[in-house]
Image 1 (cartoon, rainbow, N blue to C red):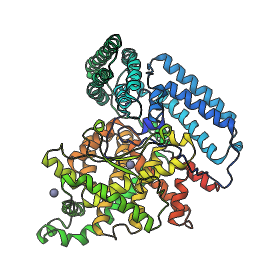
Image 2: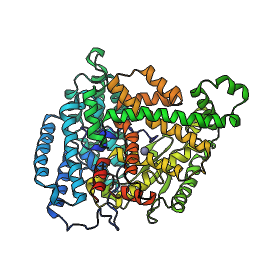
Image 3: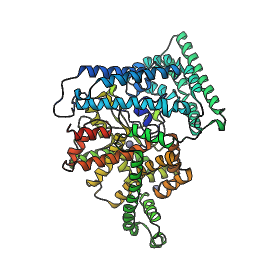
Image 4: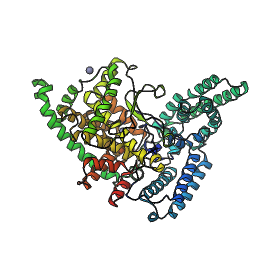
Length: 596
Ligand code: ZN
Ligand code: ZN
């Protein structure tokens, strides 16, 4: 539900995150909280040093194979390394998978603590995911947008926590392999998906400027002439190799490209590997269809009650027979209640303490007062994407702040501002803040930080993380947030319908061959979206798969879990489910069932 759209172009999808969070998230996963630990279960077993040593080795080897994964975790030991995605890389990955499969099999679950058992399952899933990506999905052959070095170069360059001189030195070393990287990429590509060819061209073109920025940064450190000459030559070669890759992609004839859709078997398999809520893709799809019908019913009831307040009688009678049209007319009117463009950032800032106070007053969960959320205006390198997102440090930078980045609307044309503000109107903006900040993503991250498991931090499960944020929205409203305002409920249902339709859309595209016109009908008429939003969503759905299901799958998972523990109060339930860190919901369910 993040409105932030950063396409993470990772080389070969190594982590669960990289594959699952394409195009969605700035949530990287914060790690171990320094002071308190939050052990699962009553008795913490004595430290299992053999297991700990194994996990450390696993991560070290994984980081070496995929330095971008280290970067995402806030480990900068590999900033100077770029791995060339060639055949020897794939062989090394295959060896890594086989070795770790047998190592993991040698740890009997019974000898591990509950939290270690979850970590073991997470690592096994990581191996499964990698094996699937390498040998079944094979996006390294058909997705040219998998190859883009620019994002990681930019991220390292922008990292103010390391001295500029060391950053630039690491980047100059990292640049050496860029030409080999893109040569390997071109060799790998065979029958690419046409939409991904376009994406790869646009992203690589747009990202290339980073090499000039690196040289400018180097100049600012007053380098020796020879050092500057070497770096400049590398930057020039890097840019040339990217241009060559772009030319290569542009020259691929249409009859040598394929459709972007996965087939049903691949989709179901990917869904199982990544979502991990204990339900199949088909079950979640069916639940989403049922939820859509339920929401339409609730929305119509509210809209009919609100109609006299918002619509003139002539209009009401004209559309009374068309339930969807009536809902839309009322939503359109309510959406006109919004702030001014220049107030947007301050409005969000003012709301955070209000949400925290509501959570405390209503005893919804414990909030750690030593971890305040820092609301900031969006930093320049996130450039120009309006909206809000959480960015938090990786587990290797745990002392850093968590930020709520709020974009400015200043760069938008007036009509664009108006349309954006209607979307994020007075009501929806509150739901956005609940989702992104309190008690949504930010609160969940604070809890995850207290779970003393690096594995759960690094391999955070997307459906758990998004599902929690979606669950938190409903939980707040059910507990009286907004004083049961009918307007707020109606806008909440519209917002929730978006996550529901994300699932319907994603499944239907990949499994049922849904076409663009049918997709737009779903989003525009049945989900009340604007044309811009619907078209953007269609595009995103063509570029990713399964990820769009994480919101609704996780939401359903939390609701199902809640039903299993009717005796637990809201606070006890929330704190319990959050105590496991960002573990997959199926694992949380199992651990709770076992009484851990
Ligand atoms: Zn989210
Ligand atoms: Zn307006």
